[in-house]
Length: 278
Image (tube, rainbow, N blue to C red; front, side):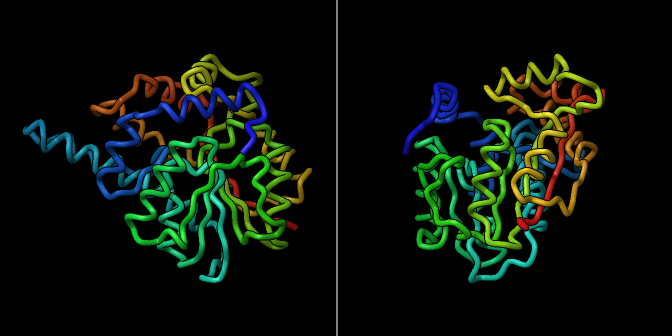
């Protein structure tokens, strides 16, 4: 695989070295390892246990439940998926959403990442789960995957679009999707009604070595690449409780207050966008 720029090398280095407990500790609950956030109402009773160890276990399980709920919501927007279809997770991380997709639909799932360590980890998980022939992860660039044109019924990005140029990404997705196929992303974006990115958004960019796009940029790039939105959902109110709980947890990273500030002041949004390839 060719990494096309110094920036992509920086991203690969970041994720190759990443061993964050907020990802690894949560994944140990069920064996599904994610690199995204959560949605839904929090069961705040998890904080009421007086025993420190039991409270810690309950909080971790609740955070994991919320991140699984986010992945299920994404998958529910992929449309009519049948076992003979093929799906692609672009920027697949340690593979959690891909395994959930296979369990939900019974179809073949491929994932791509420019992090060799993530790909190796995810393929090890596939082998342990007994599905290496159905869920496979590839050390490839999601901007130039090498897969055949029209090979996929559905493609998703789960919080990975902020690492690439949207026009380049959606051009590749449009090539890979069969006509009538579905693309879904859940992503953080800055609200360009308010102008340029806020200081909080800039802090998030620096923390994750990413470049958060304006909301309008998604729709411009989709329109240029034969992707027609069929559903747009503002998930911001649904993700705030996750961040409030995470801020009180042992796996907090220090970025939680910045996310909450950005969401609450309206300058940052958490969106689901589903689009059909025409």
